[in-house]
Length: 347
Ligand code: SAH
Image (spheres, rainbow, N blue to C red):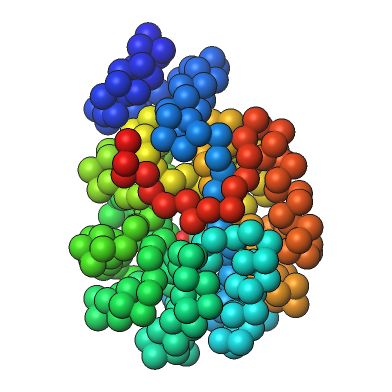
């Protein structure tokens, strides 16, 4: 019966919340079956290619206070840093030489980086590397700001909604943050013409199985180009230090359900998934993911962008990262490619 639901999901890219919930509650073979179907669907649109994104974590200063996040404003133990435009550009140059054709600028919500500063950096990257895509992941900004950054050359924007349940959102964030604003930002980004990424943490505190089913409905309705999900992992200097982490198993199964719901989606096997399980990223690729986002920040700051405890890959040199990832990708029957890896609108 679960197999039939998976087959219908593959055919129609759609189930009811109740049906998604049944699948989420099911254990055992259904997950392997879903993974197999999800990989077939991924192959249809992207072959056996895995796209690489060079993640440049350029600031860990943040004015927000999300209860789960290690770089929250209230964590006085976080050692703060900001990269200069030159440092960011030199990361991009190194990434380009290693074959990366997408640069993701991610950071805390840091007002130091005004639109002028960011537009300058984006413009530089685009003029030095015109064959590359620039993705931003800078949190909530004004519509004017999103427009200015797009005009400066940014192509994509990642903004995880974190949860599609308003009441749950309020349990993860202080009252100064608003669910409505986050959702408005996502809609705005789409309207402006970015390729947009949404996403959520799996197993975050107070999340229910019903919430996860609703996430699938939300994603189907919103139709993002990218979806970032990873297990929640507690950080010891946050209010959620004492909560349990989400599991690799549920994350991997949800990756399959997302692939079957949004067949063309660009779907990373995230660092958090690799942190919770040594083969987590490989398992993600074997369940329908097709993107990896290794950290290319300079070695000196890598250990400081700690959203959660025990984060992997905070030591290696960029070149070592690429070799290690290529080997992991090959072990799943896929290959890493030097390609912008845009959303496939064509077939
Ligand atoms: N400031 C940006 C970037 C946030 S960091 C923004 O607000 O969008 C990127 C993602 O890391 C977050 O969206 C969140 O989903 C994830 N994250 C933060 N803390 C985490 C934790 N403790 N465990 C797992 N993922 C976490």
